[in-house]
Image (cartoon, rainbow, N blue to C red):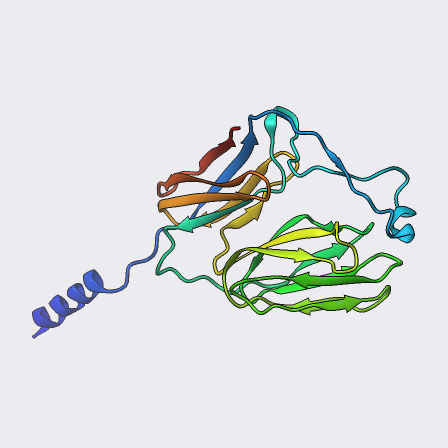
Length: 233
């Protein structure tokens, strides 16, 4: 009887739920090796109060390139390979600011169900109008000094365009996913994730002017990974 009980315990230990492999750190960089493109002057002459907020004309760099071809404002995310995995909900909020009659940041990353806070830091009235396809459309005026707006997107979507119906030059884009492996590249073209489970993934990039880019990423247990993704003309 004791041998039988011991055998059952050993069988349960072997067949019970396995401890998941610990995640690893992934660092990356997005680059652009094509020809540099001319910047565009943002015309704010339709709104004198917006022009007064800038000492010199505002340049709109749709392709923001730093040293060694570093590409900023690229949305990077795991496109496939996380199927069947669940993650804790996001905490805190992500800020989209209306500052200098521009949306800041130009591109942002947001989890499903996470709070998007929208601030008007200008002395002029603004309007925020996301135009999603998978989530609910909304459109709201925000006067100077008004409380921050708080909204959520419940479904994944890449990307949600955002515009201001008062100032037609204002643009922003929101990438929404139901997992934590999403990021926007900084001025050095870099991004980083921690705790990505080992496995084989499709890594994807979205850029408002350059379009999409994908690359395979294989993460081995206990081994940090570094990856470079490169746009070419």
